[in-house]
Image 1: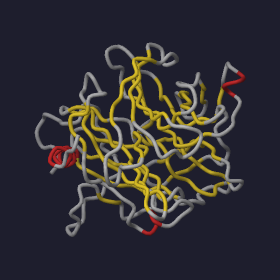
Image 2: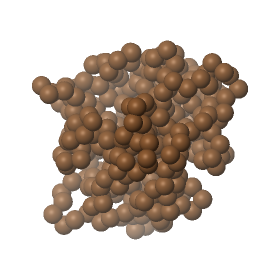
Image 3: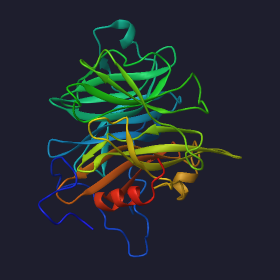
Image 4: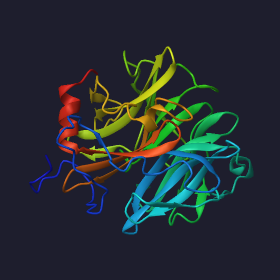
Length: 332
C-alpha cells in the first residue's frame, strides 16, 4: 500500500518522476523486478565489457549517476551518465578523470562499486579505490561533468563505503566493511564519523554475518533512507555454496541518532539471484544493490542493482511494506 495520509514514512523530498512499475498480481515478494530488466546492458558503450554495481541519483529534474564499467581489457573503471527517465541511459564512453590536489592519491589504479549521495551542497561519490589494495575513495561533483577527488577515507583494506545523506550529530557518517587484499571470507559492517570528510574516527561495530544467505560476509548497499522508523538500510549478504559465492540482498532498520545500533534486520533475503541475467554472467549468482531512489509522498522506492557482475537491474518496493516485512521477519 502507498502512503495516503499527509504524514510520510520517508523523511525526504518528492520525486514524482521516479521509475515505477506496479507489482504484478501473481507476485508475492516485498521487492519486485522491473519488467524491462536488465535496464542497462553490458555493451551500452563501445568500451564496456560490463556495466553493473552503479549509483543513480535525481539531478536537474532528471537523473544522473556514476557507473562501474569494466572495459574490454577487464580494467575496473568509473564513468558518468545521464537519463531523462532513469531507465534509458546515456553513459560517457571515457572514464571519469578526477581532479586532485594530491598527485599520489589522484594517481588512478582502479575504481569500482560507486555510491552517490547528496549532502548539503554537492554530490559525494564513494567507491572502492585502488591504493596499495582496496580502500574507500571519496570525491564530489556539482554537475556530473567535473569530478574532484579527496583523500581516501581509510587505510587499505576496506570496501562498501556508503555515506549517510545528512550529517549525524554534526558529523559526516559512513558505513564500511574492513577486509583484506582479496575476496575475503570475512566481512562485518562498521560505522565511522568525520568532522570534515577527511579524518575519520568514532568507529563502531554495526552488524556481522548470520547463518544462511548472509553467512560469509555482508556490506552496505544504497545510501540509507531516513524514515520515521529509523534508517532503512538495504545491504548485501554472501553465502558460500559448493559452486562459489551467492550474493543476495536484505534490509535493516538502524537507530536514527546512533546508526550503529540495529533495531531490526531481515532473516530472509528480500532479493536473490533467480532470473537468468542474475544467475549467468561474468560472476554468476549475484544481486548487488548500490542505489535507491525514493518518492516520499507515495513511499515508492526504486533499487538499482548489479546482476551477475555483468548488467544493471532495477527493482521496486513500497516503504511501508518493506518496513513491515523487516520488523515481522527480524533476527538481530
